[in-house]
Length: 482
Image (cartoon, rainbow, N blue to C red; front, side):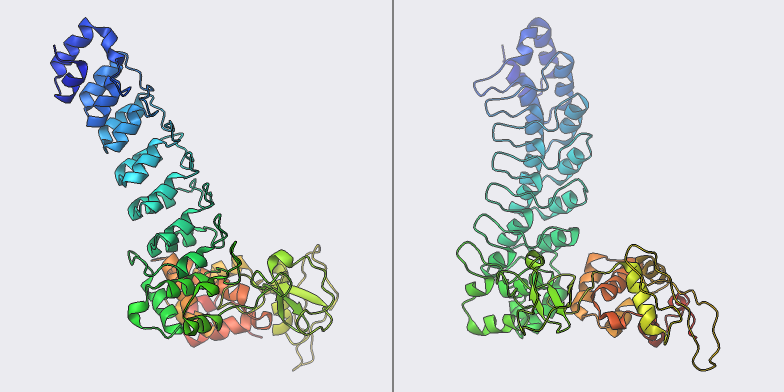
């Protein structure tokens, strides 16, 4: 008589049914590898037999000698129907094998896109389970260069981007190490920590400059072209590690970070000409720790002198010019294009400040604290020397910028350039928020608001740019000129 396993492989449903009725103890029989009939049927995707075995009492949670369940093996063979049946019949979606891997780990490893989608849609799925090496499913997908799977995983808000494995590698660092720029760009856009470091202290820039050529699949070619042009390199070098490093630095990666061997990314670049070109784009180094980019500017001299980690140092004098320090402000992020100061005031204070610049004199000059509500002062008309009525003007905050963005139309890039935003940053916005002009407009306005010189952060500046490109609907959101 054929064994129960033979009947499963040959799809002998009738013979299997008879065997189960005559010898019910065979239902959970194991072979020399610990495989049960249900595991065997799941691997081959025998949907009808799977149902029959479970109805007859097969253990859906049984494991083989390596700790894998029937669900693991159904996923391994990309047997969608088998996966659906097992999940509906109580199989543990988060079951871990002896090496700690879940069925989702396996689906990501093999690049079984539809199986990944099916598992992610199941209630109770742990998309961030770690195996014995500390790898999450998305890390496994990145390492295997499964781009479509990574994209699907990134659509899940529950997926954590910065979990480090036992080598302290994050998915972003692995994507760069694998030379896959499309994955890298998506991970950065979703919010992965661009300044994460691995167990050797290497940042994404260390890994990038050591990578000769990057994969072009879904890479942001327009942005790379900007970076390539800035470095005066040839088009065929657009996917080189140096150009990618320039791109990563424009996203906030720190060229001053030293790894465990005390090397900065620049130290790893052998070509002195390339090193010199990149140095021209570097933000100043922190003059206190000399290990990070300076992000805090001191006043009144205006020098960028210390990084965020050293911001609590009680400086009395500027470390660069030794002039007395009266106040300090932080730059939004250490990006090469963003050289202006972002003050630490609240949005309301910034709005009040912009009114103070825009209006010629104020009747009420009392000092306001941060805890008190901001009261907009009255405007005094010097031409007529008569007191005008109180002029309520919308505050320059995110809510106001959203209102303007709703009425912007398709000219946000032209207006952005007029407001002083670099073309490469406008391209970042266009790629990160495709086919959504309202969101693109808002992100452009927000970048202007948070990075420009406070003295130009006014309704007047915005009005001038909108008027130049005839954005009449957006102009209606601004206060009428007096």
